[in-house]
Every structure is written in C-alpha cells, then in structure tokens.
Image (cartoon, rainbow, N blue to C red; front, side):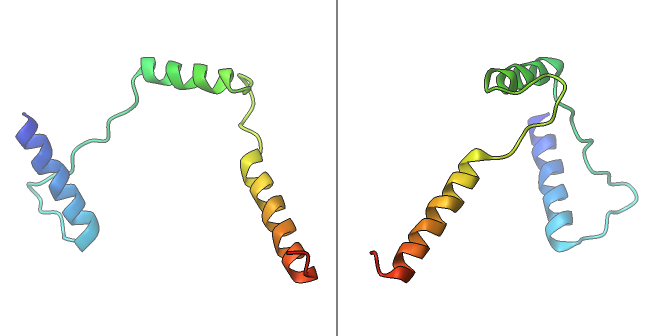
Length: 82
C-alpha cells in the first residue's frame, strides 16, 4: 500500500514539475481532506491565540513591527545617527 502511495506521489510531482501528459489509464491520487479532529484542533489553537470564532484573522503584527523597525533603522542611517 505504501509503495503504491509513494509511486502515485512521485508521478504527481513529475507531472507537475515536468508537465508530463497524464495517460488515460493513469490518474492522480485524490486530494485528502483534513480530518474533523484536526480542524477542531486548528480552530482551538486559533481561538487560544486571540481569534474570534466568526471573524477572519486580523493583521500580522509581527510584520508591521518589523517594517517600523526597518524604517527607523534606514532613517537613522540616512540622517547619520548610526
């Protein structure tokens, strides 16, 4: 079973990378969905990090902090403070 899955995975990768045509008797493996337990775990993790159940995730604060620090560093270098 595992060898068959590995073969199907390698064929799918080869088709994607090299744009190989898919033969009529060959099919790509079906895409597996996340299990309900895993979805529940991800939702609980999102809620524990401050998310709310019925709204999308907000802005990325780490990104904005990095942008502000980078901007301040560039401005300091341009003004000769560094």
